[in-house]
Length: 178
Length: 194
Image 1 (cartoon, each protein chain N blue to C red):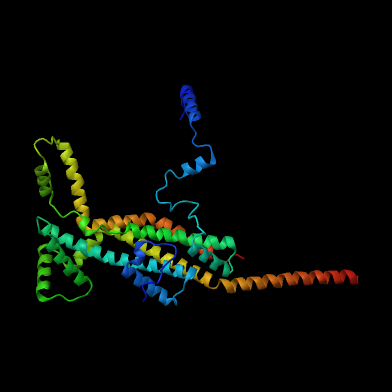
Image 2: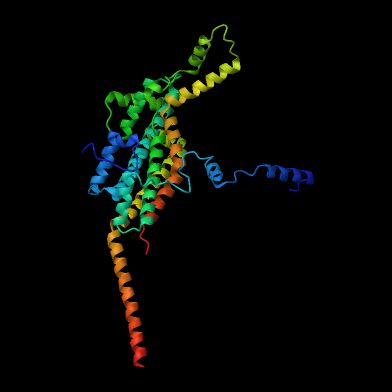
């Protein structure tokens, strides 16, 4: 699609104003702007060799005949896979029974909301409807095991590709290179 | 089994201390002669994959039974009664797992099924049809876990036999170096002779 000359000039002028961070540090920081859980990070887990348990695993791998870099790679991959496992368990945690809202029919909920209003509160019908929708959605979720399970399942479905990558990388790192 | 056993040194998340999970992982570790270190971590991750297969299968059954109960209760009652739903859920769970029902329980279940025009089989089929999407996801997740186990088993074997393989490779290299040295020596002798 062709754009006008004035538009082109304006675009170029705007692009010249800000083209993002320039220093290496700035670029590194902005590369983490959209990070959510870090499982997709290409650099993977940063291994802290100061931790005795990790140092022991690296040492063990070296004793098994892996080179220093291969040993670190193997332990890094194991740690990355463990992170995915942790994330899977975290996404499967059930909300405690005490924190769930009790079942209430839509009529009873609406009645309760109205009864809680004082004459001077001045709640509009749109606000009342918003509160009702929010609470009813939560009540349905808290009282429907299948719905809660579907949510957990979705969490695991999203983690599946990280899981696949983590295990494939372990396999690759454990392979003995001739 | 001792409580002090550490399932992994790479995480200290709370799930690792849940009794059922811990027992499961320890049983898998025991079947591999309780390896520690890297092999222990690999077996522990394998055990985790087995754990999820178990959970997914149990949840799949539960989902079918819940959907079956939903089919009956939502049509029978105006207000979804929690107790009635729970009772029906228990009966259907018993039936699905092959447990026998008492005479009264069987009568009640037959009555509810008949009032909705279902047989147990048609109700189950209906439930499967309605939850097809979730089941497909569960099946994919189970498949993924089984693939994980296969890859982790291969990694386990690689690490387990690494010292032998490394020794074999070192010997092969040594032999090749000797061969090269020998052929050079032969060449030198041949040149000298000529």
